[in-house]
Image 1 (cartoon, rainbow, N blue to C red):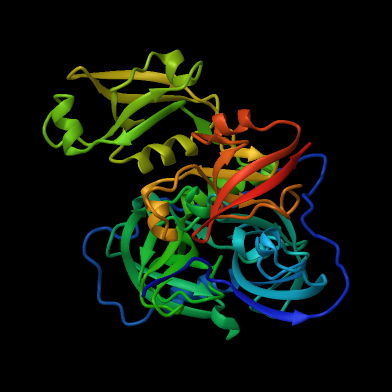
Image 2: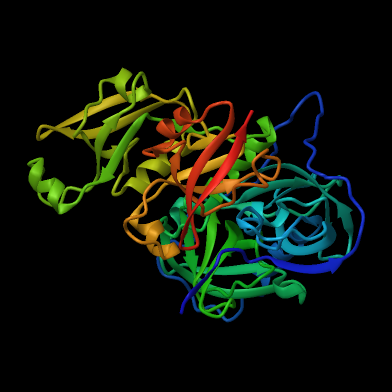
Amino acid sequence: MKHKVISSFVWVVIVGWGTALFVMAKDKSPEIIPPQLQVDRSSVSAGSSPVVTSYADVVEMVQPAVVSVYSNKIVTTRGAEDPISRLFGGAPRRSREHKEQGLGSGVIVTKDGYIITNNHVVEGADELSVLLPDDREYSATVIGSDPKTDIAVIKIEADDLPIVTLADSDKLRVGDVVFAVGNPLGVGQTVTMGIVSAKGRNKLGLLDNGAGYENFIQTDAAINMGNSGGALVDAKGRLVGINSAILSTTKGNIGIGFAIPVNMAATIMHSLINTGTVTRGYLGIRSETVTAEFVESLNLPKNTKGVAITEIMSDGPAEKAGLQRTDVITDINNRKVSSLEDLRLFIAQAIPGSKVNLQLIRDGKEMSIDVILEERSEHPNALLEGVDTSPLNDELRGRLGMDSKVTGLIISSVSEDSPYAGYLVPNIVIVEINRNPVIDVVNARSLFHEGRNLLLVYYRGQYRYLTVNVR
């Protein structure tokens, strides 16, 4: 059986007692000065290339700026090992604290200490430290993180640090030589070589329980646990991606690794530094990728690629701009839209309040419409405070081994500080609320009332009733 290794991140568990200060503070300086990045947007190659016998000079430029990121996290084990078991009659155990130590990698991008790494490297950390290749060690502060792209920005207090030059990742081509630099398995800084195997991988479901924004560079350069947050660089020694994940049957490298394009990473970094959060554009539609069936039913030109609008949200940007159901979007700002994932990514990368140009087909005619985007809420599927859900579809049923007859909303995540964290956990399907069937998240919210609520849920092959007290 094949297994997905979503996180290339090493955790070592050390049992202990006590508490620690949670270090996730944002730099609260009165004036934020945008980081000055070193960027080279030229293509990596221009025509034929001479025979290369060594990349030592290229690697030496990058190595000083790739660091190891160490984290400490105090974890409290409460009740039964399986949180749901105590809801169904299991006896809780005494609470216990233990320390988890983690290792990842990071890339210095400014001389004054801004470092890009992965969200999953720093997530939940109580303490962070950064070790440079020259053995200098610094405490680090998390400036901000974004689970939906797996990007985080941390900061160390230092000056005149070595940095990498950023490339334009949109100019990467399949077949370009790349190097992965990081600290795999804690053995020390390591460089591996491969090529760009593919671009625009966006249907992997690796980020934020499948709700993330994926646009991965795929590479066969060896990436292993501990490489997370490290550099993917081109043959000129420029940063093209941030290593993030692997797919593997062995939990080790088999040549299918993924990196976040540096163009996306830099955009997220600027937003995190400037505001502490990430804002994304919102179009206000529901849509589907155009299939052969769509082409025939809508009388579209043969081989049309795009996304068909199936629903317009009331009073949203799309409705205000005059978009209609069955419109087929083919381009956004001259970027081809071939799938629903393309549309979602392009709109999310746009700044709220910005104007985007949509090329579309309506009733067989090509049209151009400008839309002013609004800001997307990052919790449109929030059912209760700290409880996010997703519609239950055939893909999720297959992944979790559910019968096709199971209906409702599936819990995708529960935040640690949610008042319902002790009662609800991911992968529970909420079938009914107070004896009423659950249709969608809007309908489900309306079924709750203040006080005790009765939920019919499906979990691990069984239907059960739970009571949840809503305040």
